[in-house]
Image 1 (cartoon, rainbow, N blue to C red):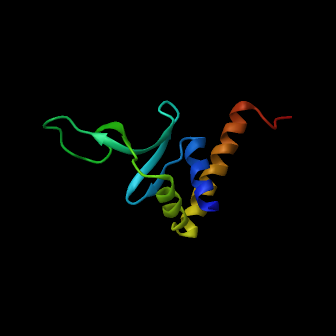
Image 2 (cartoon, rainbow, N blue to C red; image 1 turned 90 degrees about the vertical axis):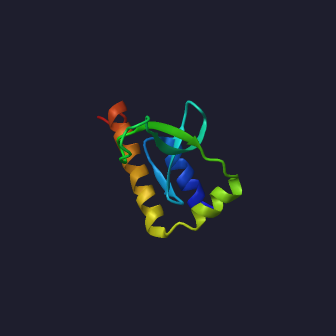
Length: 101
């Protein structure tokens, strides 16, 4: 369960994308939930990754599935997520001036 908590914390803190089952998961404050990051392409537009309009797709999975998939993540992936979370928190602290003397 510890891995799931860290993944959820990273998603909710913001600007941290987590890969799961070949999808990139993000947390949307606006829609209050976890979503799959996707792209929309107009008719006739070449399909190239990163060239479409960003969209959020409903990540329609239950909590038990999410927890199970997080717990199955390799330790090195969780370590990377925790590292990204620590760096993001540090950047936010510096922007707010917390810890400045």
